[in-house]
Image 1 (tube, helix red, strand yellow):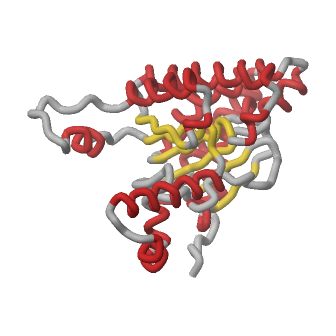
Image 2: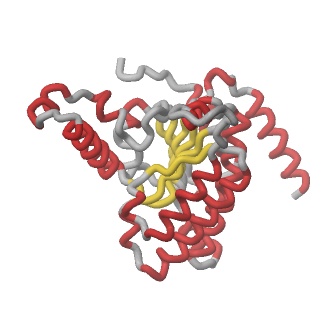
Length: 271
């Protein structure tokens, strides 16, 4: 067993060394799938699978940070998941909240909530908002000004981590259009004027991920080969990598293989 671990470590180091930093994706989206399947295969209950999957998150973010990824979006809970049996959903929500609390406490990453937070139970929503707020850099000691928070954000060079909870791709686009219409209506524009001037950029600027680059690479674990609505608008030019391993068993070498595969693709970006 020790010999196998030694060979594995050598292989992992060589694989990492062969990945050109220039080819590392700026933004990686991850569909964390397979918690329940992993639990079933191990003879555990679903909650234990979700807990093991949550424990994997900080480790994964460390790998991404080491390789130079700038933005990671983690899909932890979909809008469809909210209709699950309360007996499973309630402990899952608590596990997610605890995981986000722990990520915030590390201080290593800047967190952002990505999803229809208003669809979540209010205590959970407030707990997630508070964790995200704790993860942000404090404002500078300069005199109070409207740009103070923006200046602090601009100085934040840490990896950005999007926490997708209560997330659905269609919901995101609908929310973006709704926010855009409200904004234009407040400015006095008519529906006809909005329709005449509406552009793709307008919608992009109102997505949950506004201000961030689109994902270059989307990884889904557990062997499922579909996006299930993840980052529908943003992933139009993304590369997809489907991994057979269930999320709780996902290893650094699996991540490195995804990066190697990404580096070997010819990205035409629609051209």
